[in-house]
Structure formats: C-alpha cells, structure tokens
Length: 326
Image (cartoon, rainbow, N blue to C red; front, side, top):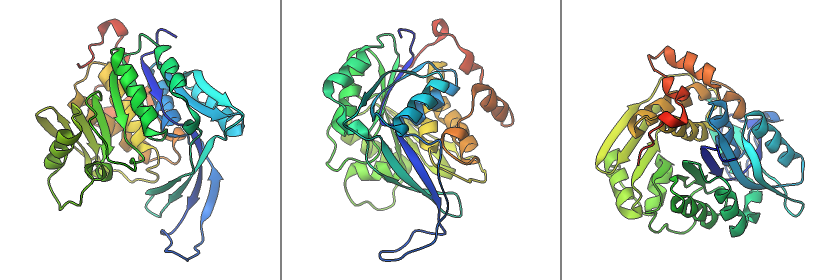
C-alpha cells in the first residue's frame, strides 16, 4: 500500500444510458432508445480506473453499498490495478446510479441519482487518506459532500500531497477560501458558477483571474470541450487548442482529462504541458462509446498520440526520476 502514487477520494456509482433526440420540455414525453447499463462509474471510480490504465498506482477511498453496483465498482477498479482496500461497504446504503442522456451529437446531459458517498464519515476520510503515506497526489470532488471532499484535500495537504479538487456538481452555497487546494479543475460553466454572480462575456483569462482571486487556489485548469482548455498558474496564463474529432460520447471525458493530467504531472511535465496532453487524451475518449471502455491503456494512448507528434515517454518515468511540481 505504501507504493501508491495517487489517492482518489470521490464517489462510485453506475450509469444508465439512454439516447434522446433532444431534451424534453416540462410536461413532454419523448422517445428514447438504446437504454442500457454500461461500464460507467462515478467520478471517483472513473478517475481511478483511468489512472490505473495509464500505469499509475492509484488507490480509491469511498463508500458503496453491499449490492451489485458496489460489486461492479470493486471489480472494475481491481481489473485496472486500483487499490480498493479503502472502499468502505455498508448494508445501510445503496450504491448510487445516474442517468446519462445522449443527444444526436453524442453530447451528454447527466442526472446524478445520489451517492452512497454521502454516508462517508470524517474518520473514514482521514483514515483512508492516511493509509497511503507515500502518495504524491490527492484527487477529490463534490460527488461526495463538499465538506468531506475539502476535508480530504486538507488532510492530503497536511501530509505533503499535491491536492486536486474538481468542484462538480457545483456546491449549493458560496465557496470560501481554497488556499489548501493546489489545483482547481473546472469546466467553463463551473468556473462561472463558482463566482456566484451574473457575468457578461469576458475572456477566459479574466474569468480565471477572478476565480483565483476569490478562492485563492494557486492553479486552475478550465476545460473547454471541443475548444480545448485554459490554465492559470499564479501569473502565467495559457490555452490549449482543441483537437477536431467526431465526438460520439462525451460522458466521463472530464474525469479522464483529470487522470491524464495527473499522470503527466507525475512524469515531470509542467502544468501547461500536462493540460495540453490531457486534452489529447480527452479527444481520444470522446470518439468512443461509454465511459470506462473509452479510457485507453498506456500503449493505446501512446499509439494515438504519435499521430499528433506527442512524446509519451513521461508515462514510463520511474518514481526516482519524478520531479513533481511544487
């Protein structure tokens, strides 16, 4: 357990998919097709599996029920090499499920059906994080209650970990200072929502400047879908151009982006380099149906990246050679 590189503290659930021509309006019934249960986890299990397939030694911390959905989460993560020794199970909760609606362009709208991660206790969070003292990075997000996610980030920070927080779904109440968060990972809608005010159209740089000023987190990455990504590292702003592909399913692309970003950071890449490579990784995933099935192994993403002239040798960097950003 002491050779774990990344600890992921977030939810596990199982997604149910349906294709729709468009979103219905209130009171309308529309026809859907292709309703099915897929290999689709919550944001925690998705991220952990994507990390494992890239050869990163990841551990998952979360709570699930003593049910089929929990069994599937344990199976899927174990198959990817993820340490699930801190996946707490309880007969008093049901593992969450979600509904993913896919329109004709492959873009997703998701209803989160609730998470068994709400039953996590503060003691379990602290115990789960402390179990892996040599881990370099902690990743968490708000599919578990935000106060538990932020406790996980604070605990990781106190133990010298680089902390990554994805505030999704957005919290109901305004956020206070996140000065213990090294990297805030958001999409554009979340960035605007966290500012908590109506805004006219502004530049991405101004948006990230305002967000950093308000929340006091040191670094921010904002994903922009097909338009790429933008980042702010203290006073350095950059953008990564989107990679034109035919998207068939965008579900889980953000979770994969975060995992790919962290894998590159562990390989010694700068935050800007890591975000641009993660953008390439996300482009790979959206061309494939499903969430977990779309996450490539290290060999698969290396072959894909060569088409764009990307060097993926950092994925083979050993711990002794890694220089994590500080």
